[in-house]
Image (cartoon, rainbow, N blue to C red; front, side):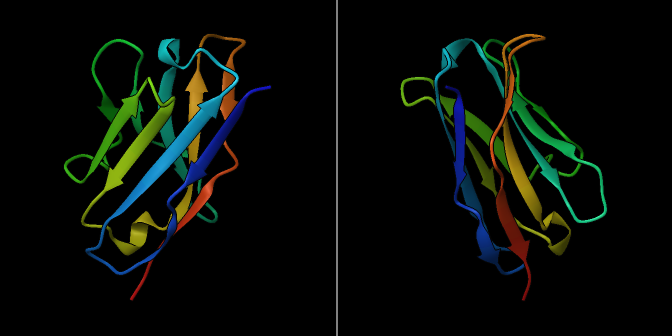
Length: 116
């Protein structure tokens, strides 16, 4: 059974930082491309950052220069360090594991709220 469990969300003031974690189980983590997406109320889900099993990381425009994605294959965990947070970063953040057309998994999401 595949599980992706996100943690680290919460309420933070504008300009603050948060670190999200996503712990995976039930997959061969090292061969999966991992990503963070987010969905704000009334908006489509959008890519925040992607870190492939091999190759360069990729960021959505809203994350460039402020967010950093990383992974620890030994711990089967992917992280998202978010700095200089803005109110428009408020969303539910989802972890995604992609291992091919028939291996696409999502976590349950973690709420991030940026507000003073």
